[in-house]
Length: 324
Ligand code: AFP
Image (cartoon, rainbow, N blue to C red; front, top):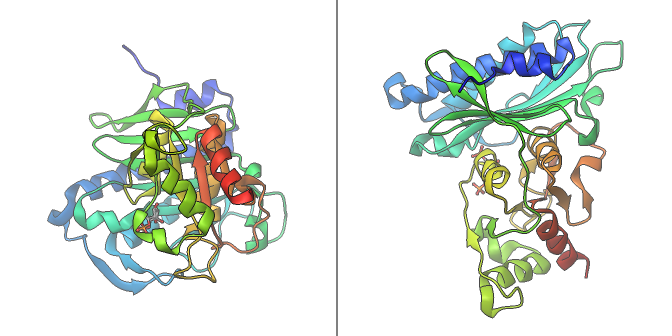
């Protein structure tokens, strides 16, 4: 069966040429990152980098390597006006003629690297309309403004999942040719969930409505929900959301009292917004307990947000527990 490659898909979908160049550039550098990841310990690139990022998190060597690879790839594209990264304190101006801004998490789930578990790269593309030098303010657009969003999941196979605003498609990296080939063209999340995804070790730190909601899921068919649920937690948002795009369910990383000054653990601009764009495009819902995430007006580039996303009816019920 002949499958179409990413560049052909983008051309057939009449994606703007500048946006095509960004998506193809990210795809190419992700293939190089997958090669570095596959070498693992043999390349001497596992373990801590010995530095902290702006989040106050210990960087892994591969966080820094992946960040530098993506930064270099994007900075070489005339279409890129500026970029922002989880691993960069400030936004980085690029080409003064570019029409797009790119935010990214170069290696999401990096605490999984040293245990050979799944990690991913998340990217978000926003339009740039100003004409002066790029500042942080230019990036602070609601997620609904995104021109494109996607991720690369470095799993048993390397997959690129993408939306340019007309549904969600999935590509699989052909290791022999280095091309991403279309392998799923109509991704849809069922409205009802059978699985939920949360880090249960934080249960005592959640708000009471989340404690009750999760407790009712765990009670199964003998409890108020009247049915059993399965649970998964990969600790890499890309992998957990990929499972939801493939077989449904609900994912949540709620606010908790460990760091009460933080709105949540996940970052709005390069985790919740791009993943949320994909989930909405696949028929799912993406909320905080107070409203739709893609409608949030960002206040700063590394802003955090509590996340409830996935199966539309299940998300609505979880939000309802908080609004009762
Ligand atoms: P790292 O990139 O620091 O591993 O964090 C990954 C992440 O931001 C997101 O991808 C996961 O869903 C979540 O954090 C896992 O958090 P816990 O380690 O607290 O479960």
